[in-house]
Amino acid sequence: MKKLAVIGVFLTVCLALIQASPVLAGGLSVSGGKIEVSVNPGSSLTHIINVENTSDTAMNIAVNVEGYGETDSNDFVALAAADDTGPYSARSWLAASPSSFSLATGGTQAVTVTINVPVGTGSGGRYAIVMIQTVPDSGQQVATVSAVAARVLLTVTGYSTDTSSQITAIDPVASTSDNPAGIMVTLTNNGNYNYNPQIQTTLKNGDKAIATGAFMNPGWPILPGYSRQYQMTFTGQGTIPAGKYQVDVTVKDDAGNVITSATAPVQFTSTQVLQTTTTASGAAPVASTITVVEKGGSTINWTIIVVAVIGGVIVIVLLVLVLQKRKTS
Amino acid sequence: MKRAAIAAVMAVILVLITLPSPVLATDPPTLTGISGSTGGMPNPTTTQDVPGVILTGTNFIDVNSINLDGSGVTVFSFHVDNSTQITATFRLAAGAAAGTRKISVTTTFGTTTENVQFTVNAYFTINIPATLNLIVMAVGISTGNTNGSVSTNVASWSVTAKDDTGYMKNISSNAPLNNKFEISKDNNNFVDSDSGHGIEYDGNPATLPFYVSQQVTVDDAPGAYTITITFTGSY
Image (tube, rainbow over all chains, first blue to last red; front, side, top):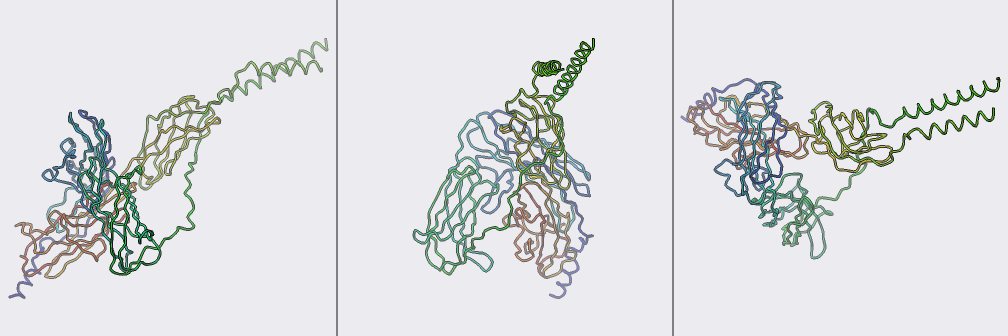
């Protein structure tokens, strides 16, 4: 009986979905896919997102406005309306048009995003996502969707921003055969505005610093009301024995202002391998000289100089001729 | 003859004094604005020219060069329309990094210091094969793989791949298989493909290796199943 079931499954599971080789139907290209502006309460503005099909097949595209959220480990997540209930959502302020369209190969479409900021809007940032995504082919076994989440980060003018934050956890990360020891910092933004955290950590044995770690956020902000985890490796010399240590953590914003700091004890139960300090060698500084390929006109009036010189020569010749004529006469 | 020479020299001096001096403007230039083409979109593979960049300011006299800081944007040509306006064509290198570049104008009498900027617009292209087929799945594990890619001129980007529920579902009944559909970017560390998991690609490499795995059991009902994995990129 079991054998029959196996055969049955073998023959029929997904049998209807035998397909040809995968077809490249991606090539969803988006420009203007990030909206980061200051807005006044009661104002309205528009932003253009250009969408292009750079693939070799036509594609159907849908555009939706969704909430912008984060998780501990995800830089961004799109939130459905039912899940987008935070006080800093801009989802209801936005509309995108057209909401669906088809693009032939090489075709382009401008999507107009209209932002209507309500009168009486309070302080802080407001956030949303304009999701631009291909519509999957039906009946495929494993269909894929290409999507671009155009993040919208609005700053309401007329108010001060608050980036008050709290370090809610500091957890040691033991070294493995592949990775050196490190630290996991959990940061919660209790303010009303986003920022890109820059985190510096120092591992101490008593008062002596024995290793450091740093996280320089490359561009993903922590939104107000969200917590995020940041893992850093410790850089030092060699190994450290099992034991109790202390970690100092300092969080700064993009401008280098200290947002918060904390100190916590950590314990490693075995010898830990640190990331060895290395210095880049042989790297020449990158030149930033711009070469002017072609030079256009200039307003220095060389014509005047030439005229002056020619005029002078003519005057001299005339004078000489006059004098010679007088002399001969 | 001597008197003639003296007279000639005096005449030349007289002419030069009475003519306007070509180097009277010795004030350094100022750059007050940019209009016309204030930014441009680079091509991922070839250079891209941006004509019609109009720079306004003062003392554009004896202009030697126009420069932009950073990399990826050069001045292909420029024409000094008058002492307060220059029209230029900027050239964007293939895939020039998105962001702003400060412009400066250098004349014989100095270099502008004002913060007037030209913008290199961002582009982001995500390319994922539309389908990935496991052909006929039998009891046991079925696997497959494909590669996507990202082409962009931004320094920081992220792509997540996942499905809402993480289950392949019967096309007719919508009933799921017993085990979740698993995905991986290295063919080793497979994770559930549901919204709580999924995989994330950050910045590098620009290719998106994608591996899938489905465990089929004898308890799974025969039929045709489907799942949609959404690759969402942002920058």
